[in-house]
Each structure stands twice: as structure tokens, then as C-alpha cells.
Image (cartoon, rainbow, N blue to C red):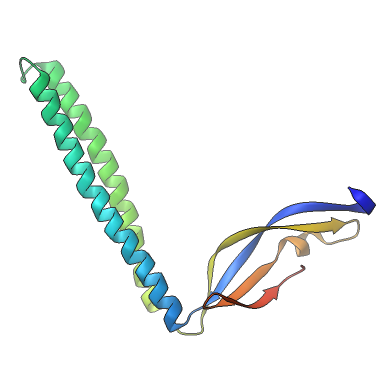
Length: 147
């Protein structure tokens, strides 16, 4: 704390102006994530089935209750992971719908970045922490708040 100042880390809100390019980029990102989610689901199903087949193949008696318990456990794990992935996919589809519904020139919150700032006695901490950057197609248009 030199000269009565302190350097702190803060989150800065990134706001974006909706433009045709922004919408295209956002939709492409979501479509890529959806395709990845579909691939994960397919891989999960395949690996789950392979594991079940392997458990049955290694067993002398596939109808043994212990084998059935192992198979049921794998099936439960696969079902839980499938439900999680399907929920993520549902959320992505909702985001995609929301992006399509956005009006041009509307300002939306795009995320957070971190930065360092100096504070000193007498500064308003609330003002120092409420910084934001406004971007249009990746170019900073405005810096809002106490920098």
C-alpha cells in the first residue's frame, strides 16, 4: 500500500450492442455447442453400452444378481449423465431462441472480464467496482464507470 493506494481486482461487465454480425457469431457459437452436445450424448450412449457388454462378457453367468447390479449401476450413471447433458442442451436451445428474438441495437450483457484498479482513502468503492465496457462487433465503444 504505497502512497495510500491499494490495487484491487474487480470484475468488469462486458455489454455488447446487437448487430447482424453479433447475432451470426452468437448463433454460430450456440450451434457449435449444440453439435458438441449431440456428439457427447452419442458417445455417452456408446460407451455405456460398451461397458455393459464388457461386464456381461466377463461374467460366467450374465444373470447373476451381482452382474445385474453392476449393469443397473452403469445404466443409472448413464441416465444421470444423459439427463444432465439434455438439460444443458435445453438451455442452449433457449439461448438460441433468445438470441433470435433480440432487436438490433439492443444492448446485452455478454460476460465479465477482470482488471486491476487502484483505490485510495476517500474513493467510493461501489463506484470503483461498477465498471463496464460497451462493445460493437468486438470494438470498444464506451467505458462506463470509474476507471
